[in-house]
Amino acid sequence: QVQLVESGGGLVQAGGSLRLSCAASGRTISSYAMGWLRQAPGKGREVVAAISWSGGSTYYADSVKGRFTISRDNAKNSVSLQMNSLKPEDTAVYYCATAPSRTVRARPHEYDYWGQGTQVTVSS
Image (spheres, rainbow, N blue to C red):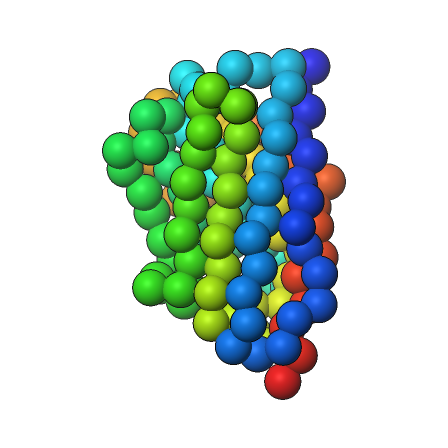
């Protein structure tokens, strides 16, 4: 059974930074694409960043380009999201997810396993 556990969320002021981490077990994620998705209150889930199995390709939503960086450590079966210059509109529950694909996936329905999520709140 695949388990994904996120950590690193919290409360931060606008302009601040947070680093989210995700530890995977039950699946060797080095063979699969990974993503960070978020869901704000009253909104649907969106993929904010994604990375291919090798780390050679990445995807970012327009709203986070230049501010967020996704990375992975296949030796540690983990993936991270560095979030800089945070804005109040980044407030959401952030989920780590894995997709049954080697290439970058940009749509929420393309992911088959999800973590429980970690809350990120950005105050103005």
